[in-house]
Image (cartoon, rainbow, N blue to C red; front, side):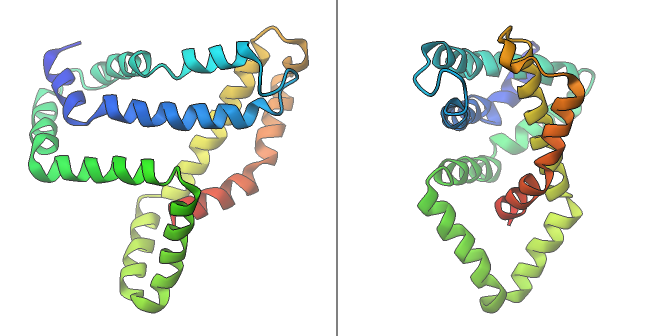
Length: 193
C-alpha cells in the first residue's frame, strides 16, 4: 500500500472507525445470535464474530481497497490528507466518531431523536437545511440500499456456512431481504433524521 494512502487512512482515523464498527458489529451479532439454532451462548458464533470484526483485519482490507480505488489520484490523496490532517478536518472526524459512539447508547439516541423533533418548532430554517442535505445526498435511499445489501450478504454467508438450516435458495434470500424493506426504510429514516 503506497505511503500516501496510508497517511490518508491515518488522517481519516480509519483505525478508530474500525474499532467503532467492531463494537457495532459485535452488538448486532449478539442480537442475531438469539435467533440462531444454538442461541446466544454459542462459542463458535462468538469466535466467528471476533474474526469478522477484527479491527486490524478490517483496516488492512479497507486500506487495500482504498489504495486500489485511489490509484493514480495522487493530487486527490494529497489534498484529502492535508484537509483531514488539518485542525478543522481532524475536528470534523473526531466529532463524527464521538457522535457514532454516543449513538450506541439508547438514551443518547432517544435524546437526539427528540432534539430533531423539537427542531421543527424551535428552528424550522435549520430543520429545512437538514432535510435538504439529506435529500440532496440521497442519505435515506443509500442507507436502505446498504442495509438490504448487508442483510443479503449475511444470509449468503449463513448459506455458505454448511449448516443445513441456513441453506436457502438465492430467490428465498432475496424475498426475505426484500420483505424487510419497509422496516429497514423506517429505521433508516429514523436514523438519518
